[in-house]
Length: 186
Ligand code: IMP
Ligand code: MG
Image (cartoon, rainbow, N blue to C red; front, side, top):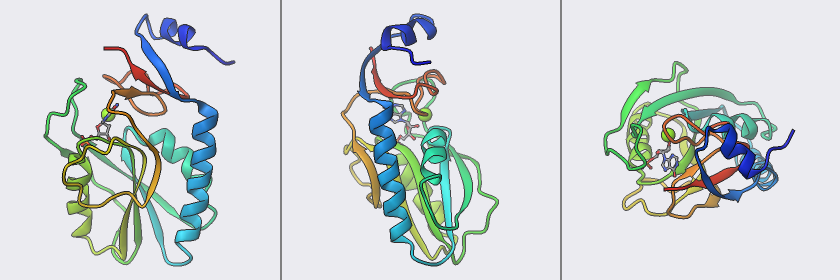
């Protein structure tokens, strides 16, 4: 079953998505390329893929199935947004990965880089645990983070300075299940 944009808006209870930015097929192709890149970038060593919840859950699920080398998977939960479309500036770590990080390649997977505050905080925390290496993989990057400590080694797409939803991205916990990425009407 495929729903078009108008049908999705109806399913969403009348909430409007303005336009589809990246359709499911475009995302699928890019994620496959990223999986190939990641596989090639880590010829050996333990690789722990750390997903930043909740936004990265769909991206991570698709991405890891395109990585053809042994990996471990764990998650981090950080909260930087309330139910608003603007960053509150506060980043809290709500769940800490149980897996050991020392001596492993860590690949931190994020849905979208906006102000960069979430990632900067996570990079600080993870860096203290003696990983063999620490790299970022982001699906989307708005390129507005003033002082990002680490640019993503693996990036899906440049993103416009708009509020985006779908493919894991939410607005007040809505829209995460959309198979495409769309911009949200004001
Ligand atoms: P940052 O700390 O400002 O970089 O924000 C990062 C987090 O805010 C992301 O992990 C997302 O969960 C959320 N976020 C940032 N921009 C958007 C957006 O356009 N749509 C939905 N969530 C966003
Ligand atoms: Mg979010």
